[in-house]
Image (cartoon, rainbow, N blue to C red; front, side, top):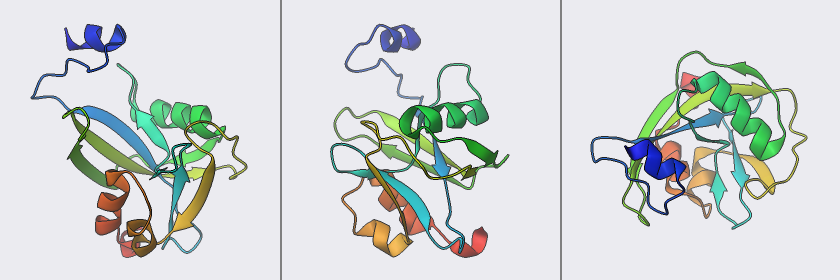
Length: 149
């Protein structure tokens, strides 16, 4: 089973071609709702808060877990419907993944640094396109429309 390969810690998960690795992402907007939050990982690349959805986990619990694990933040609101859905293929292992973005509000931005978050900032879509970022940041920047939020 493909889950066993992932659980056994194999370098390349055995994910059949008809499946996507699901990653849930927090779309945290500033007060103008024209900028969104990105976080910088220890490797210098910018990303969205969030991560892989665990087997059997719902999006709400997954986002709360990821925000706490990555940044020590507490979600006060998570939308019930996604705002954006992006699919891409990772270059390094050819695995297709889907990023599902939910609008999220957090109690505050007093984050605890970790490997996955050493800095954070609000950016416009145009600013995000200029960042050294993971492909999903640039993909969302091309889709982002503040009028929809």
